[in-house]
Image (tube, rainbow, N blue to C red):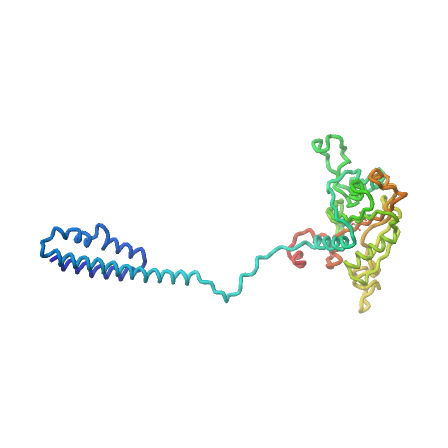
Length: 364
Ligand code: FA5
């Protein structure tokens, strides 16, 4: 076979190979095969000089023409394949903007106790009170002694209180086995706050408290909010007005409150305070005449304890400027769970701490 025929054959196979390359990498293989350094056509072109003189022009001309043609074929095929690949990837990556968006990742929400605590804080900050917090691991001195609990007071008993073995490393070895405890109420912060700032003082203290209790309305860990107002001429009437304003914000503008005589070692006089029932409006019976189950037909719901700060308590903070002849004050304390249960109609306090999402998700 002559050179010319061979070049024509190469040309044909190159055309077929280019046409059948169906992606860019097989096209590159075709280019190497027909135009690369070791390709037959490259060899022919390289050997032109050695040909007979009458062959050189024809063979050289044809070989160059075929080479050029093949280059052009490859580059136009390459453009075609690139366009097709782009098209494919556009289709594969396309986003249907008409589809509904993915639902937002579920975010958590606040626990009913936290929501209720924040609501109480908002109301009290609105009345000019400062929110302060104190230690949950407390000294007997603040939890009991400085709050005028005599040494044999029943609240100090092991059955009521969680005592903590004091660690000599943190207490310097000078604390006995009954000196450190989990605070049983938020009242110890009354004394700590008065030690820290002179009167007038208006604070509320939300926080965790601990007692050896467990039933449908009592849990070993629960939350209280303490309130303390000390200044010149503060009276029991101020206490009643403050509680009324707070409870109307929480339970509605038609609520009334009442105070009943009670006893706490650190207030004198002491009261328990009730809010008029917001289900029956205080009448004890519902519209259809049924007995109101929320207040047990009493018309009032008990919320917490309060009273005028006992002068003996001031004597523990006289160095900080609390002179019972010059200042007076009131204090109150109540359970946050109790308020949350009433607001949301939750029947068992323990549900708050079971962490059952079926219950908690109802408050999102
Ligand atoms: C006190 O703790 C006083 N420190 C309140 C006080 C403050 C009086 C300032 C005077 C001046 P009491 O033990 O009654 O009082 O508790 C107050 C409220 O805490 C109760 O009305 C109740 O709502 C809540 N409470 C008490 N024990 C538990 C418990 N185990 N679980 C849930 N809530 C509780």
